[in-house]
Image (cartoon, rainbow, N blue to C red):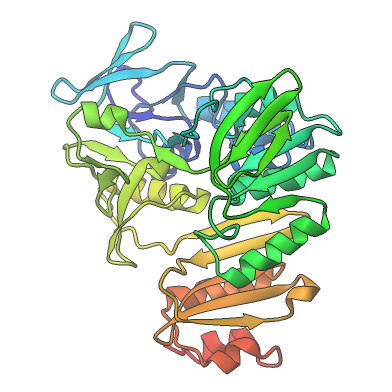
Length: 414
């Protein structure tokens, strides 16, 4: 029986991380009250489809819901939606809300996520400039997603490329503007960047790299996106995808330790203030696998952190040591990535890029640290095990298709 009258766990943020904390607590037998507070008016939903199926009109809002609303009711999880937390009093253990009410807590969880990084140039506040972070963002964007419209996407990361793929399917004229010298430069090797650039160009996307935006100028005929090198493109709409800023204001104002990378937490998701925790995109978390703090923006990270926190709150602490992994869908290509490739000194590719089914392995001093798989789900699952085991496979074994990857796991090449 849940005692809803007593302060229990209050979760600030009703996204993936917050919802996962609430359900994981119930799964572990937590019987205290759980309240989840969300600024948006929607129940917790999945964000990855926003730039894909939902933008394309192929998914309904209900299909995005992480769980039916009845599940939260059945498990005694109170959802207060369309309400913002204005301030945290960590001494009185009380929250002040935007509707004028206050709420006490025994344990507080910050799952505040992040907000899109704004484009810091003149004209970026134009009505034709959009971001893709929330349901309402996409609903506004859909109104302008018309065949023949000129779309300029600023940022050649996951959001930019996924949105470009949807826009091409909808018969928009698409240009991707990337300030670095290649797309996906922060997350993948040049070989993978070249592959995705070629795929997008084959579908009719214009890709401009080494292209920093100088300003946006709106006229009756549209908006001019002017670049620092003198190039310019005219657009009917502009979508900005240049990164995410962790939402740390509440934590910082409450005296909780915050760095530019996020709210600082240990491997049990504890902040610097007793009984205050944080999970998900807003955190700069301690990861035992890497032996350092990091911030990771991904659904798997939010889920695994939430489970670690639920264990902490149920007095069954575990140390967070998950290997990060990610995915992206573009033109029917399933890209799956595991580990962090930064600092690699050898790249091995298994399969032919021309076949659109291959996997890239990243090694550092002989240790497999990361892998990117394109339409290779079985190989990816094995790669996850090898990266987690810090395997040291022979590069030739990774490259040769006639040598099953599964054999490397069985041989324990660590």
